[in-house]
Image 1 (cartoon, helix red, strand yellow):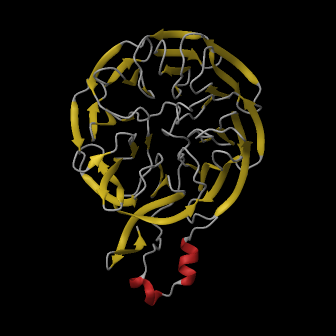
Image 2 (cartoon, helix red, strand yellow; image 1 turned 90 degrees about the vertical axis):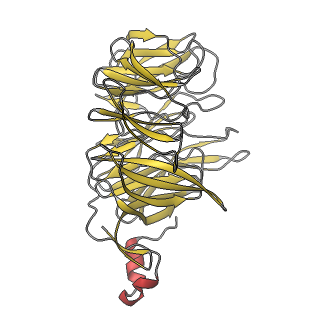
Image 3 (cartoon, helix red, strand yellow; image 1 turned 120 degrees about the vertical axis):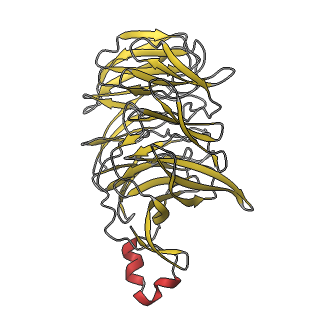
Amino acid sequence: MSGSTRRQFLAALGASALSATAGCVSSNGATYEGTWSRPGFDDARTGFSPATGPTGPLTVAWRTDVFDGYPTTSPVVADGVVYYLHTRGGRGHPHESVVSAFDAATGEERWRTIVSVENTDELAYHHDSLVVDQRRLYARTFEGLHALSLDGDRLWRHPIPTTAQPYPLVAPPVVSDGVAVTATYGERTPPIGVAAVDAETGQPRWRVGFNTRQIPWTLAADREQVYVPFFEGDTGLVALDLQSGTREWSVSLPVGGPVTVAGDTMFVPLGGDPESIAATDRRTGAIRWHVPAVRHTESGVAVAGDLAYYCADRLLLARRRDTGELVWSFGPNPAVSLGWTPVVAGDVVYAHVERRTESGMSNHLYALDAATGRVRGSGNVSVSSDLSGLAVVDGAAYVALGRGELLCLESCAVSVLGRCVRNG
């Protein structure tokens, strides 16, 4: 596992050479405190953390190599450790799905644990599924749900297969109140199922089958219910009791992506002509408002305070969560990625922006004022078109690239000849 850390950089670099380097030297600006527990931050997929993320010039504080397995997964962070799920292997070869742990400040790898070894000849072998709580890690691979200790020890595995194409790619389990919930993802013939296990032991708690709905989408939850959107077949949205699996309600909607739960409102991307973003009643599924929105099926909605954020039509838009009134938009020049789900840390919202260069698509991360959309910083990420979701803790943001890299981004406080020599 390669990748230079700040400590290695400082040890190899004299003070007189600072003006000639392209590396970053960290000050005490970032504490790395806080938790980013899963893609979308929480079970409700709000995408909001109270942490203070980096602004100003965003620079790479450290980078490290990871396996370049598909899909590119979102890092999660807890107690100064970054966890990452990745797969080594490819079509025609055995593949190992692995969870690695890295020091959040330096990128130094602490441990690596193989969670599964499979020979399935598929394009993808795991979902973007890693979840961390106070005691365990959870990962969803093609063949089942796995639990690890925070030291990397394998605790249990519950078989629940993915078939054919791995829809959805982003499929973290719901982990709440002692229960872990996942589903039988992928293109398959009915019946499909949603299954809950004991979060500590992996023992089955309940299972619900569906005979007509074909592809469950990314799960979301509040403290009482699990919400299951279905992407094809008899499309719609089903609410299940978290502890028993009892069906609370269902509604027929042309669901086109993951849902977000915010108080008594749910935000649901809808397919159809035109595509749209809808705000629905959490208790009944009834639509309160909806607006047209051309977007990517993996992208969702973030909610912070009175505003809801989403990407559509090459824009990042902020709307009032109660009425749908547009408050501000950013783009389309530069063009915001249609596949990006916004992330909000404190008073900053982050947007993934794509720019075409001579060598291909260049990716930039923008930090915007969450209330006004004013630019508060940006930085070049890569020329890879495949970018993971963002994880943010105090002073630092973490993102993985499709070319097999995990990055830590921080604010640059001091630059020399256009190069960052001290992070803020």
